[in-house]
Length: 132
Image 1 (cartoon, rainbow, N blue to C red):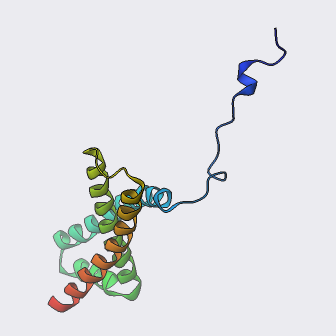
Image 2 (tube, helix red, strand yellow; image 1 turned 90 degrees about the horizontal axis):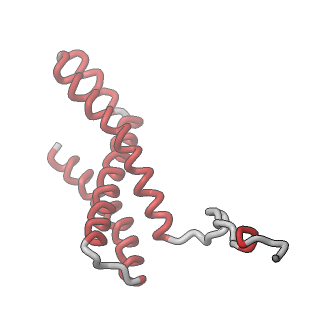
Image 3 (cartoon, rainbow, N blue to C red; image 1 turned 90 degrees about the vertical axis):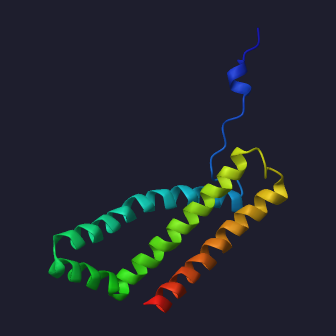
């Protein structure tokens, strides 16, 4: 019998600090974070809808908050989060069909998700200010 068991010879599971950060890994983490952020951002939408139902004075107060520089930064972040998470969901939908698993396609889709979310957020805000 040997003095070491098979358990002692098995490698330990590597931690995140062992892996070199890659774009796809960061995008996966960002997708999870944006999902959590959307959960809290939905409370802002609910707050706005409740304010509309309560009355004009309260609605004006909530709109004043969202119209302030701080509120607009929050809304900008919420817009980007919503678009980024939606594009990430579309990327996962493509993967669910069994397509897009080649390394170059995975990298392209991760970059397209990031760039697309930024571009679409800017476009949404431009359109928003144009129709205002």
